[in-house]
Length: 188
Image (cartoon, rainbow, N blue to C red; front, side, top):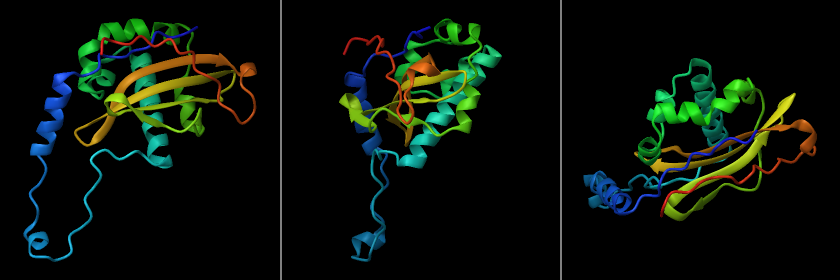
């Protein structure tokens, strides 16, 4: 029951333009800082989330997908995702992609009851895309995930997703099963 993954095309020049536009929107240096007074430390342009923030990001993504599956309305999931994800996926395509989860009645809301188990540390890779893989050891079916998030307007937003229900028997205690790497990539 592998799920077709969603992965938009990687940004080209538009991504570079966006970065330049975000730099131009940065606030001016306060007068206190110019006069030599102590100024607050600058916030990282793209912070890698800590454990709690990462879990919240995963839980909110699982919840958004679950709500979309329950309602059949994928427009909110699409709208809270990165612009590249939005361009690559209209709501009807998302409904097709998540059809097997709906048909098999996989309840993703149960993931809120457990902490995610990670397959290694989250990684920020090419194009400043945060990738996190792991699972929720749900019964009777564990759910493995492979999410990619893009930093956009001060938030990590969904960029790519793969969710695969797995029989619990394939999961060893205390470890996360591997998510089948069946992602399709757009041209880079």
